[in-house]
Each structure stands twice: as C-alpha cells, then as structure tokens.
Length: 122
Image (cartoon, rainbow, N blue to C red; front, side, top):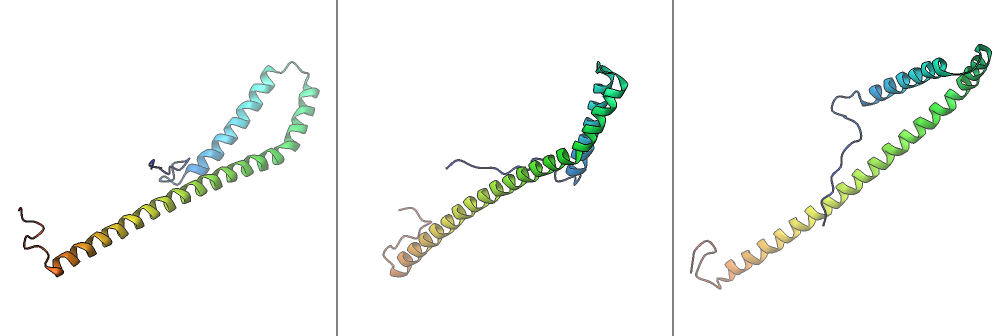
C-alpha cells in the first residue's frame, strides 16, 4: 500500500496563511489596475468607464475567488480525512494481528508444549 501524506496548502503553523493570501490578492489587483492604466491606449473617459464597470464586477469576482478557495480547502480536508481513516484501519489491523500472535504464544506457553522458552536457543 502506498504511503499517503497530508499536507496543508498553506503554512498553518504561522496562523497568517489567510491574511497573507488576501494581502497578495489586494496587491495583485492594485498592481494590475495600475499597469492597465499606464499601458492602456484609451482616452481618460474610456478608462473611467472601464474602471466603473470593473468596480461593479469586483464583488462578484471576489465571491467567485472565495467560493473556489473554500472548495479547495474542502477537497484538502476530505483528502486528509481519507488518509487518516486509511492509516487508522492499518493500525487497527496491526493491533489485531499483534493480539492474535500474543494469544497464540500465551496458549503455547500455558500448554507447556515446549520445554524451551521463546528467548532460549535450541
């Protein structure tokens, strides 16, 4: 059986994964807007009209990004849960096999079928 690992998509140990992500989103939007304004071959009134339309779309785009992010985290959580369940089944099987082996050994010792103890050489 292949060994599965569960890794979080962000660095959860610092606790700043979400804040860093949102800061990066805001910086990216601002930088993209500035770059678009500097390189746009449009007049000022055309750019203002485009900015108004874009500003109206921002809440919808932001909602889409949030939905996609939540879907990604839900998928990661589901995968981690699956890995934990698989590992738990493996551990339970190993414990059951160990108990069975111990019971067999105890039975052999109680029956006295051998005068040699398990740690002695024949």
